[in-house]
Amino acid sequence: MIKDGTGSLQPSRIVILAFLLTMLAGTVLLCLPVARTGAGENLILDQSPALPAAANSGIAPHEPPTKTVPSLGPALPAAANSGIAPHEPPTKTVPSLGPALPGGAPLSVALFTAASATCVTGLIVVDTGTYWSPFGQTVLLGLMELGGIGTMTVVSLVSLALGRATSDTREVAAHSLRGIPLGGIKHTVAAILGFSLVAQMIFGVILAWRLGASGKVPGGAMGVFHGFFLAASAFNNAGFAPWTDSVTGFNHDPVVLGSLAVLILVGGLGFPVWAVLWVKGPHWWRLNLNVRIMLVGTAVLVAGGTVLMAALEWNNPATLGAHHPGEKLLNAFFAAVSPRTAGFNAIDIGAQYPATWLVTDGLMLVGGGSAGTAGGLKVTTTAVVLATLWGEVRGAGAINILGLRLARAAQRQALAVFSLFIGLVGISVFLMVLTTPWGLSRSLFEVCSALATVGLSTGITPSLPVANQALLIALMLVGRLGPLTIATAWGARKRRLVYELPKDYPLIG
Image (cartoon, rainbow, N blue to C red):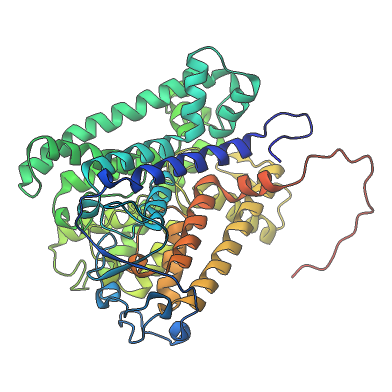
């Protein structure tokens, strides 16, 4: 049921419907033969969803599996677990399912890729640079822009600009841009779209110039396209790169990595932060609690993440160990920024230590800012949960954060989102461990990456059975739309209670 008790369309359901329609349109376009290059992976049909007997075989973190997954038929590709870059495709086969046009991508491959782009995640089952044609990559670019800026934000902008916005449309726009006053939606959304395009244009030019100067990518129109594709992917926190090894070929280049990091942070802070800063300026006492938490939280996470990445991987010869100190710090910084929640990798994720994976899991789950291009729990949600926990431990009557008192409604909402998020992680990891041979560490990393819409991987995504690909698609949708949005859309109609039950207190802890 799409309508509420008044007969009006519910904003949360409209947002979900818009994302599903966008993903469906992208799937259809990617299924077309013109979207493929004709090269790339050999895809095999996954006809059996049987659970592999090796699922609980206790494979070591960096040890390739020695058993095969029955649902795939042939043996799993040995390269899938040998420390390849997150966006590197398998060298043999990729499980697929569904019909395919002559010369086109199978339905499951097109659906997974379209979902990943629309949800600005970046997880892939086929290599972006070699499998998809310029037309296919252009489709991905469009899906990233729609998913990053927000499907309903774009739709509402068009309606508002034409002066034909209904009250329902304005409500949807406000839902997509939580934190921005409804009266300013028209001008604010226009400013957001303009700001987004200008930022991408400026850094697109910088990246196109730098890529061309490096000599590592084709010059001319293709080099320019790669630069703007990379800029759009970074700003929208999507993590798609037009090369097999993501951006590992530029892990010595501060211009490329620095540009990507700036775009990731700018897009990931959240649109309400920039709107408030634009209106009120950088005056601390005038900033609301959302902006204060985002600025302080982002600085702490980036700085702390950089220190931890450097400390854990400094002497790892397969990651930071082969670089000089300046490059080590550069790549440690980028490895701390990218999980929140862009998904580019400049060093080999599969070769990192399990402890580093755990740190990355945490950064991915926290994510970036609300109503922006980032995913995850969000910095504000995490800060509210931690502050509430600390307040309960101290026995505080009110929860204060950065000089402002936290509303009790925000505490309940944050705890609800946190509980739903952690519950989804636990259930999904259990299913991954049960149905694949990859073990707990890699399964947890994959689930966190999908739910937080990051796109990093230890290299197992292309070899996952189609059933597990479907699980990741569901996680990406929930992560992008928000678990509370999904729960609200599926919940019952709001009912006004005319009575209250007696109050009581169960024992806690």
